[in-house]
Image (cartoon, rainbow, N blue to C red; front, side):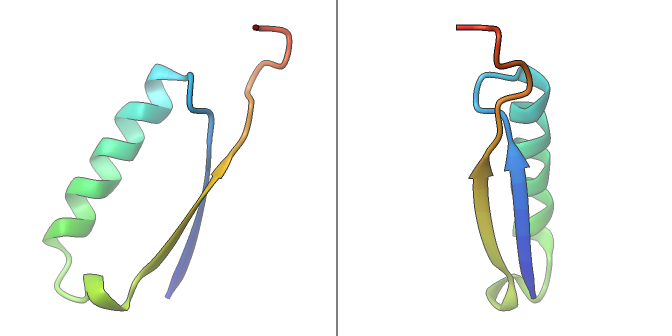
Length: 48
């Protein structure tokens, strides 16, 4: 299974979601069958 995750690297809530996802994935029995592709997305382009 391929999972694409779009996330803003500066967003604290995205970071929390990333950590929760990684924790859940570690507990998943078939984690070796998961291909995770992280992609960057800027939530607010006006923020430097």
